[in-house]
Length: 232
Image (cartoon, rainbow, N blue to C red; front, side):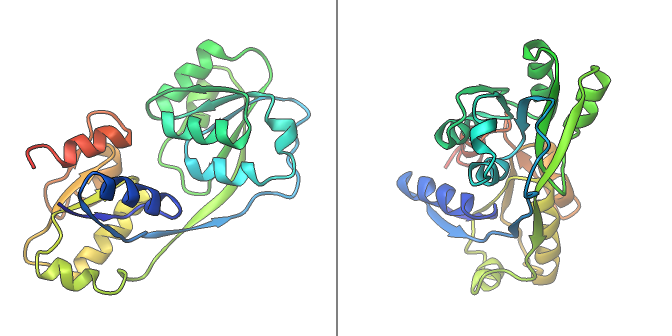
């Protein structure tokens, strides 16, 4: 299959490599640019755990000068790949919710003791981890680590491939990416849309006005691949 991968770098290239190893033609079209915006110093005096809902947050924390102080704290990750990235970055007590932000909040509720959970987040957040935790009586200190800026056009050649129906599927990993993808598809106006396969119903929702959107059974990449390549 010829698959368009829309997630930001460096994750776009990593996903494309996995697809090529599976025998597919992977086209890299990151629709968001990650701009790291961490504070020079985070207030960690009362922080007793760390939580993240994206691999981008792990990337920023891995480069932060306060990593040695954070690495020994319990680390709650939204999914298995994020958890693996955290372990590779040096975090020593990593737990994965293997789900979405509500699953992560549930994991924290049953695992967390006292103190404040530092939530390393992006400026635009699809979930509501802080809200879930607040309603459970857990104080969450949100620290903005990055923002996502939309691209203004497809990479060179992608629009023509879409018009010629030379792309079989578009993989979408977040609602923010889906918003940008919807805008660019409206500009390109292909006569027939490729299959659109999203990580979750929420992630694909901004594209639903353009046509059918499929989504993974669980919000992780293996399930996304399974959905995208069913029957091929």
